[in-house]
Image 1 (cartoon, rainbow, N blue to C red):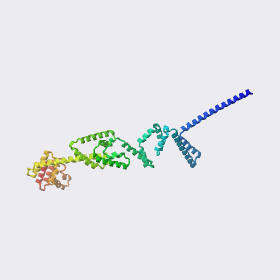
Image 2: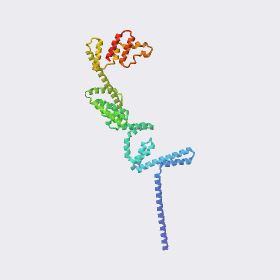
Image 3: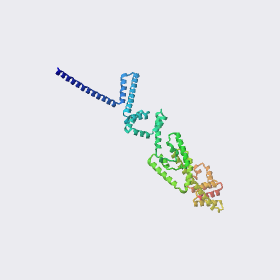
Image 4: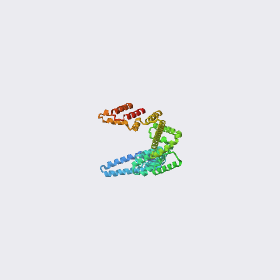
Length: 411
């Protein structure tokens, strides 16, 4: 009895051990299955789930558009709910890696452009939150905030505002040495608000008046003036030529006061231009025209002095005609500039050479009427006119001969 009961006892123990081993194996298998399901859930694309959910709605409801639309709406709700849960899980469990923070930042940044969120998230995860913060700072966080306030509902206007703002920010970030300190408007372009920019310009102009700055010249004027050249080589040559011109003008010596006064006049004339390069071009043109006018005035004054000197030299001649011939001869010797001799003779002698042409107008033949005009040589034309005068006479021949002789003497 005892021996038989002992064997049964050992049999029960053996069965219990087998059951324990089987239970442990089953539990391990269940854990493996659960882990595989979790891994599959992690690897599964939420967009793929949404796509299959919509296909299921079409298969299930077919032509029933109302119920199919309701089913697809539920699919979208579950998809959004899953994304929110994923974000919460990322924020709770993977905050150290910055994934939840990246998604939050990108969703906030591209709220008006949701298709750019995944690219932003992947870029943020690659470079890290610190690099993204730096990019946001450099990319113009102020520009985005400002444009979102101004154009909250209009996506197109917001994008245009962003591009213009970033372009202005890039221009304002340039070195101050590349900008003309004398141009208040250029200096104050960094202000985006129109009121702030106007106040900056007014303060700059008041400061220039107090300090007595010369707005006509500055170290960066050549660089700013040559920004219109898109080619780098052309821009460099323009800057070099401008600097050479400024050095030549700066070493003018005694003419520096005249150049300064000329520059002041041209500056007042050209201050209507708000663009600095346009104002410089206007000032250069103004100064060039004034120099030309001064040159013409000096030449006229010199010629007038030369003529007066010749008239004084020929005063001893008693006859008017003899005195005039003496003056003309003196002017030729001295190199005085005079008007055309034919025009002088016309004015002083009553246009007698025109009278012969008028006398020839009775001819119907055009060639005979214009018989003296075909001569290009002045002497030949004068001989023709004398012959015409002799043929169509009418008195006064001696007077014409005197005038013709005077004209030929001058020429």
